[in-house]
Image (cartoon, rainbow, N blue to C red; front, side, top):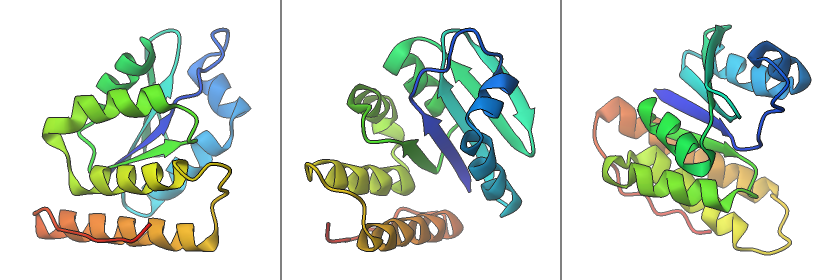
Length: 157
């Protein structure tokens, strides 16, 4: 299964890719853990200049061009699942949705449904129930990938 870990917060323009990963350690640690769990992982980071680096089994894509550039970089990775860090980047989420509309793998659709449901609850902070729903989404995405077909999933938000 191919996972794209999406970070829409613009990387500081004066830092190299390695320096960004050193400044934001979870941007390296979480995807590396996913890679060790036998997932194919790409990380897309909003950036001022295009760059790529590979580390700990993870490919990092630094994508310029705002929301459209980030969405294009994600689409080029051909993900089964997209995990977007933060709920505060609506333009990026919309651009990603429009770019992947015709290629909508079940994992991306489910993750989007979950994020939209949580984000619409103003002032809502994720709870253990949200974590449980997110886990359900991931398990269904894995099942979809394993069976090679799209699955209808109903998860109450």
